[in-house]
Image (tube, rainbow, N blue to C red; front, top):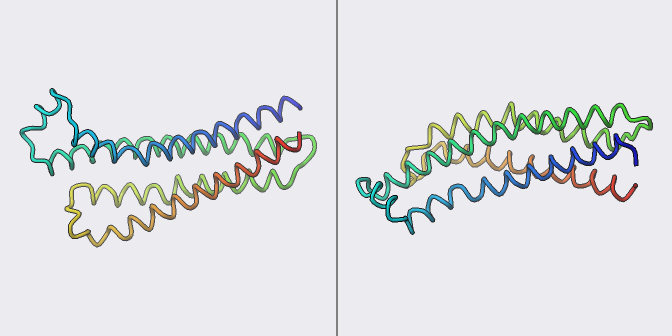
Amino acid sequence: MTRTSLISIALLSAWLAITLCMWFVATRSFRNVDRVLSRPSGQFEQMVQTLSQDRARASLRFVASELNRTLFRAYGFAQIALGALLFILVWRATTRDTTALALAGVMLALALVLTFVIQPQIVALGRTLDFLPRTPAPPQMSRFWMLHGAFTGLDGAKLLAGAVLLVRWVVKR
């Protein structure tokens, strides 16, 4: 196995690992708000006592939203960097593997769309929803969930393409 092959496998593995970590973070952040509020520690309970349960929850959910926005922005740029490096390595390989090049190109293209098209729309719309009551659901909520679903679906397609490429490389070697 060449050094370029090993670097390509390491880059792709890192990319897939980062994706799985982001999925974990995204699914846990809002649950943690409810977990913390349902079993607050002594000092924290004293701090939020002055707020109603709804205000404390809205405040903590806002912080979780902002953390997710920051992390997903960094995730997007990290994906683009990893994807560009991977694409260049596959492009410059001594024996051209068009399937690998196509998969790496699709992954990079999806990362670009996610980072520069879908994620900014989710962020902008999410900020308009942060402090609106959820009952009844605001009219913008359906668009938010549509964008969220598109992001998740495309990110899942990217992950699947990466897994196929990684398995292909590992089995081939």
